[in-house]
Image (cartoon, rainbow, N blue to C red):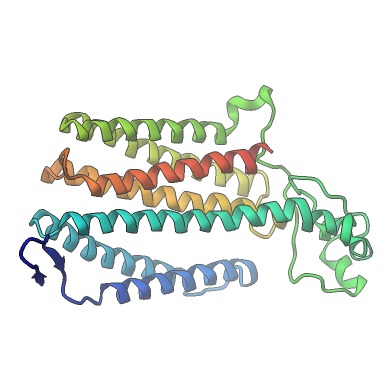
Length: 326
């Protein structure tokens, strides 16, 4: 550890070199490889014994352990008074850039959904510049949600093989029902509505907790932060129920055409981010409850987590609008 200063200037703490960033990169690379292997195995090696799940969970465990050591070190340094105002501002800027990168991440998926719904899928039905596609997929008509795949329209994978063209690889059977808005008569049984109410409420409770710590009211902070974490857990449970309904009742799967793919990619990644945000807020609650961390003057660990939580709430609003409503 080293700190250098000149007379009249603020001390800027410079930590020793660390291998934690390299370790985190190894964990994330392993996670990506494991997740891709799980998806490929479920699509093309169903029922076979593979080690893809082990690789995925090993990567998650490695990354979790790395982040635990990294964040613990950062917290100790801050509690010891090593972090100057300038260094704390760099943490703020870093978190802002991280959230911006997440905006771009989800922006890419929303862009893909826009492209599919307004360009590529209508082209497959012979609209616009896709007039020749009517020769490949005769009888296919575009509508959203896309419950009948082009492969279904021509009679399935056997009919595709008999026709002699290999426009795709694998069998893609459309779902028998969508999770879109079911109409007001059935709205009471529509899980996405409850998830929306829960996430919006959690954003409000998170703000109340923030106001509590700003007022140095630890009891208020702990109470409303705990409520926020509980709402996050409820959201994740309801999403599990929704996925069970999608898979086993509606036939919506990753390989059930572009509707299933976009549904699980968008809601799945968002659910992963909700899980991360819930865990982050839980850590902040435990820090406050057991260690007495945070004050009106110093609560950036919680603030950063709350920014992230509000971000995933906003993403859900767009998901609810473009995946479930429109």
